[in-house]
Image (tube, rainbow, N blue to C red; front, side, top):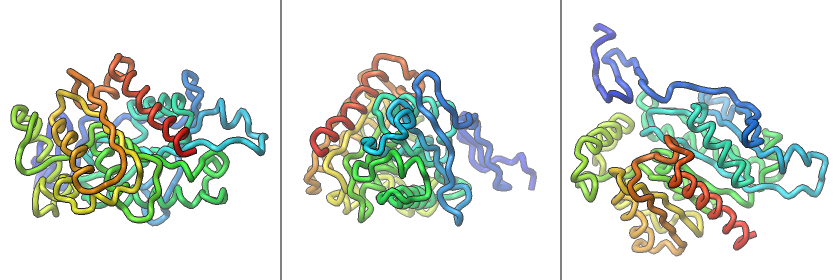
Length: 322
């Protein structure tokens, strides 16, 4: 069989060939961990699981409140933000310039420690691989609760009583599912334009049929075992009976008015209340914006407002629960 025969063509994002080769057409650039002069944030890469060599993370600390006060035994530890990147479960990594730069800014503005998870991607590793890896990353982070875990930065600077989850697009979907897992006591979850879908189109899905078709195809590529298609509970929260068990008191959802999933995200807000979850859900919608606008145009007014609200959410949790 010729390696040039295409099995699935999702241009301009990726192609899958009949011999199993995957050609990613975007999100392949990477940058090393570094000290970022613009934000004063220091980063490094860490391995998480010996049994899953490709599972790793990029860890970020704001040096102004950490390493500059390294000798202070009474140093106040910082909230820990565990972040899951987007890319339809198939694209991007924490090491891409787009995500690396965004996490630098977020860590600086929020004055928090961040762990950006590098989970296995589809189609080489179908779901639930990304969910399993993300859960393993959370378990790894929890090893630092006593200050004697495997990573010295988390031991020294992260407060494991103040853990937040966040993610955009597919990463928002992952953050949602991690919040439903038993045994997590979270301060809050931030979902940035999470990747949700359903078999019956609603809202913008009815008008933007091309994008919806692309997303449906990517979902089937990422999770070929989903016998219910886009009504699988992994992609359609409306079909998930566990919503009332969300493991935090507050959820913040960022929505972009022009994105295809917009109405799914508003529906998610309603479902949390309808299913008996007793927490508080907040929504911020950016008018006239499309999916992941905050990453593609991080200095735009709407992106700056999103960052400001993100940071405010973390600070409000600090005040109300600290």
